[in-house]
Image (cartoon, rainbow, N blue to C red; front, side, top):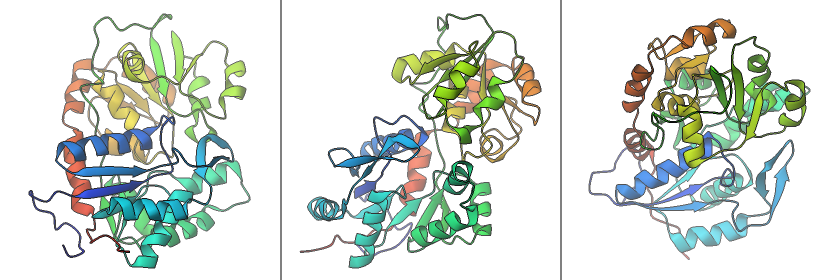
Length: 350
């Protein structure tokens, strides 16, 4: 099959290699997105293989110890690519595995696609102020430049990255598992209500302290872990830090809360927003890119620069409307977008 984008017919059955430095046991939106992508690709009849840090020699990433970076993975990765013989290669992250996959594809002239999940320029600058955001954007332009398509979650992010000089941008939106995340009648957290919930990494770039500082009734609950937890938990003893939760425990926490609070100003999408809405829980957030793209002016969340006011008003919203809104954001449509963006090429030989 010749290389190209958007050339797949309904009868094509592909072998798709997804290269990612982000993988279990990490719990975040990138990992959940890639897991659901593989599940839906297989349901459509495609064969999927993940190249991840699992089973490789790794070292913890500085300031993100739960992220493990593979050490010198190129040789093993090239053998893995030859063995699987993929029709299409997608590089999901810019870590050591992503860099190695990029080098292999360029060496053999294999078209590949990439995706932009994380605002590394803002995150790196938040931790190391002496490193400018533009310096990181320059590195990212170099990384993504050879890709036939760089996939982004929303039109507004696409416009923003075009402003930073990125090319070949295509939309790959995000969905929600409405069977896992749904209203649960008897879901209840054992704290004084109303319950204001945050789910995500506990890290400086997530702006969690803006939520914890609010003077709200009831109880603030934080689900997730990260480098900022050790300093935030003793500062805010009234808040309940529950660590990471997955599966039914996470679904019940969403469904048992009154408002989902999303204090981040830098997320590119915010998959947790859809998970909360699918559970029937309205959202309070700032009027910034992620929430604006996901929610817009739908009556399922309140976007306000006064996060206190947003939380209080969100308590009055209709929970059934939240569920109805989320039902229209399926993973299947997102997976078909992903397929239409792929570059398909015969595998390397030898």
